[in-house]
Length: 313
Image (tube, rainbow, N blue to C red; front, side, top):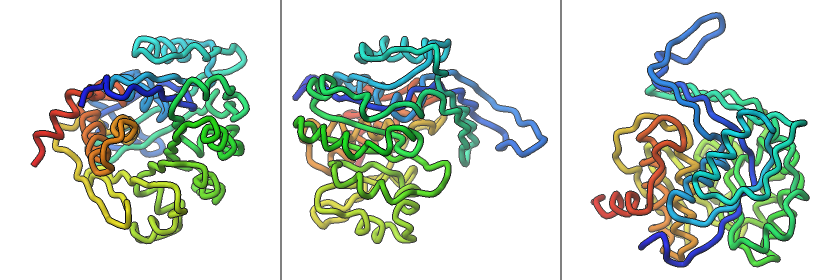
């Protein structure tokens, strides 16, 4: 399969921020103490941007809509997306806003994030005009819990997208308040693909068992794929449990791996590949993204992902 088959245009509606990634931290910092890191990179961040850039890297036509400040971080993100071939013509940097920033601190065992939301908390569903939807075939939203102004109208936005003939997907991301509100379950009624990680799904459903959590979110329409890090991914599709392992790569940093998984899965699914094959594409792209520091520095091309899938037993 080549990236030119079945061209689609994907609209990403979401947050924009820059990542400061500290990789190889000797420990996660404790109050009153300082730790050293082996590497650092400033890179385009946010779940939405990482997914958008992953999709563009795979050869997809991508449009991005969100809010950003007219500041150095905003300029950095805008230029990075433009250089990746993403349509950013609807973006309007504002001097009244400050672009968000995330500090990502990674050890070999785990990572921690600190985020200043900035402009990402200002985007509303009403800001997504009909013209943006009419020019797309798929709508993806990430970071449901971080986008506080978008969240109340998110279900209506997905409904508008459906009425305009688009397919839809949602990656909830982590809830910093850890309240995991039930309104997300109502929003899923208008969503085709739900792409949480295991921790998020268990928290959203208040279940201790992954199988029970899948049953809990089953609504007769939405298909769910759960990202499980080193354990790959799991899905319940046509009443069958499907598991795809992570692909072995020499991992450097896991920042944004789940968002690159989303890009790989959507790339394959939108080309109408079998469900299990789309899971393999997601797993391959998530795995390959860990080869470099930051979420976007080593994202996979379509040929790289296809080669990894073909080589796997």
